[in-house]
Image (cartoon, rainbow, N blue to C red; front, side, top):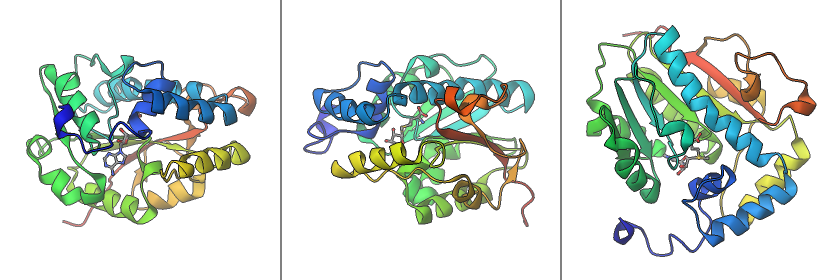
Length: 261
Ligand SMILES: C[S@@+](CC[C@H](N)C(=O)[O-])C[C@H]1O[C@@H](n2cnc3c(N)ncnc32)[C@H](O)[C@@H]1O
């Protein structure tokens, strides 16, 4: 696996490994931990925010299977394996993990995709047609609904790429499908978010938290399944007072709606 990674892969902080460290994982290196220290210095709530975001994965899988009757799923930008995605609800029959990071895709192949009914793919949201054409994704049964997780991936993608990827996905998904999105919010802690953006920028990593309206605009062709956006911590839970809400992210469930054939 290591020999397939690009030169310098371990020399700079990496989004997935930094997230793994903030979540208490061990798949990370000194460069990631030092970088994460700087992030936590400006946002002490960040580890809590990461944990809340990651807990949303299994909650949504339960929702897909239990309430929407969806048992096949694509996890786009799956990240490194963590406690909340090491076991799957029994009712999920097929899940395809996708990430553009070669180290993450290799991990997903070794750890997540070793279970029955799972597969991993090294694919890029910036090239959605190729991603949707690749074997493990294309082999999903498009005569039945498919659930898609886009959890904390769009902040790492430009507006244009996000719009293009969402449009391709919406065209491709069969009726009855559902999209679950989590997305870093600008409004809940604007100054701190700006400092996080600056810290990532110094490492050459563009990080794009968005306003509620910007996220709404990205999803303008989709039909919300939950009314208006709530924060991830408040998704299907009592709404928290802002001072107690460390998610600093939105959680949205949407359907591709009716499309002209
Ligand atoms: C912050 S992590 C989120 C991981 C996981 N979805 C979660 O919520 O815990 C973002 C992930 O998106 C992946 N990613 C970023 N840009 C991507 C792209 N263009 N295509 C596919 N994956 C991407 C990163 O490699 C990373 O693993």
